[in-house]
Image 1 (tube, one colour):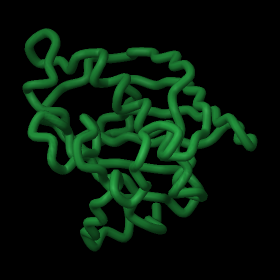
Image 2 (spheres, rainbow, N blue to C red):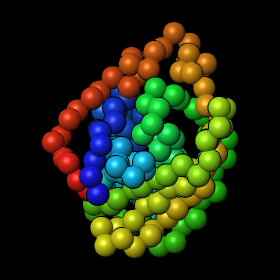
Image 3 (tube, rainbow, N blue to C red):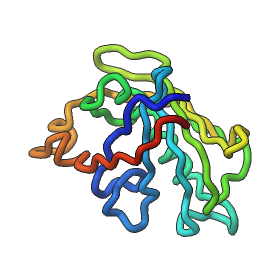
Image 4 (cartoon, helix red, strand yellow):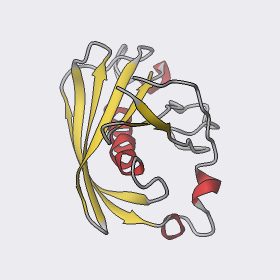
Length: 162
């Protein structure tokens, strides 16, 4: 599917933070169908049992995808998670390339509901979630910080399709 735009990365987020040595440093892409996608790998430091990623890290990635679905159309709107209903379908391996996708289910002036999926590269669903967010300006989340200060990295990589 065609990539419309690469989304920005932050400094220290555990999922997208480029300055976080323990993070995933995942790239995110706005897709032509209005969804968001990412190709990434968890690290061995994200394990629970040997060979498996911790459920908290899986849910953190689903959470990131869920809000970033909003950024396809409105890249400077932030939000905070109100609820997550995660389902773990198969063990999620680390140090293996995975794909994350999400799309908006409902979008009002104050709230967003989305669904997110983690799959292996063959398309097998490993985990999914339905997520709800309260939309807020970044100044309501972190005083004195602007969107571009927090989401300071724009790192084009030349990809045109996923």
